[in-house]
Length: 596
Ligand code: TXA
Ligand code: MG
Image (spheres, helix red, strand yellow):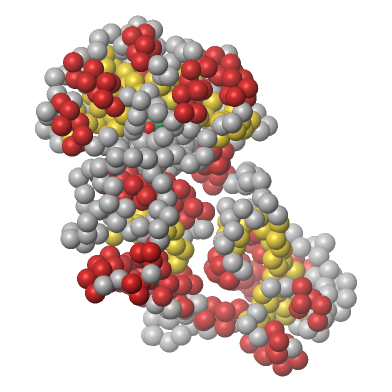
């Protein structure tokens, strides 16, 4: 499916800006697509009565139009315009759970075009409880057809920033309403029959529906020959680029908020992190939750030492892994702590943000906390399970790498800078090539921010110099050519420089090509200890030690190709590229910055 940018920038309106919201509502009525917050996830809305407007949603999402959309309303009076009949079961759900995180499927009226329902004769109706959503939907004055505002196949957006990342330039505007309360999409309930059928689990749980209606069926337990009622199950969903593995929670763990009664609030009281205050049973519980993570991390790193692992787990679990003080584990893991380990509402609230965040850190695999409960846990496990499906189709035609790159999103409070230096002897081949390759990596992975203060952006730079270099000499022409061939990086305009104390001072990390060069620098400048590494000692310190088949440690030094033939130069250029790509994420971590 072709995706074409229609706007330079998507307009962002704050939730406090009533006039701005009115204006976006007016544009929606004029046929535009608008992103808006709800208590579940952000939606991508268009006038549900206009087939042409609705088609634009599919174009922006890169989504095939065989998946029906939900109609969002501000007032229960609008239901009558959209549906032909309200069954007794539907009425019960509407009275009890609307406004709220539920979608009720009923027979559609003639006013709803088939573009909305993908040709089905039913339509899903949802009345969000989020106040900004209500204000916007009221101003729209028409029912608003909206799927979640993510690029098809990727995790649903739970912040305006997520929507911008996927949709900037593809839709007219978006309302920034902050973080979504639940973070998982609504419970979809088919109410066309006598018994409600849950097509998609959500924050309105099976128990809540059963106690209201006496009975409830979970879809998915299909008999042979039956076709699934909710389409849209064809594609890999909620999927980050990384593989996802679910870590089982011990059966004895008492899950918190499995039947969410009230709105999510990040727990103020973090006393559960004070390990000294835990009694023996509590300590054991925590160890039992954390153990599967630690075992699995060790196992993965044993098999493939260069794997970077994302951890989506509770605060205590992340703190415990940190407390192990294992340098190799810490170099290879990116953690996202969602709140108290047993709190499924906290985990749900953070799940999609966590998957997106860990993906941005370029981990190869994500280990995510599982929950065994019957309520919200089901919704959480349903989404996590789909993210964890291996393989699966990614809808055709959407270039994920290209589409997810580089929109400048955040208004950073201030900008911090970090810089990396590459050093060799004459600065004509190895270090200058590193500068070229690393500059490209920096550009490709931008923007960055501080790990500790995510509002502060970071500019990352790199440079190169030589211990015995002349000033302003041209790089080795053969190196220029080989590098252009291997990586499209052009260093022909670069000039050589000699190292001096001010260059060392200006950089946060210094990489030499050979061990001797690092020793030489440290002998003259012992105060640089901790920031000077040869490429090979840096890798060894991270546990990036590669063994050949006979068990010997493979050497990772990169010899200077000076005077050698073209093939050797090419080989050197590819080797440098591979090494720098490998260390790039570790460098970010050491500089205490991350991709955003
Ligand atoms: O919380 C939510 O429901 C969010 C917010 C934006 O409201 N919306 C959302 O929309 O998640 P979407 O399009 O990403 O997912 C809607 C789900 C799909 O699985 C779709 O197949 C199902 O609801 N659905 C919609 N209309 C249906 C219908 N008439 N019959 C059966 N399933 C339907
Ligand atoms: Mg969706």
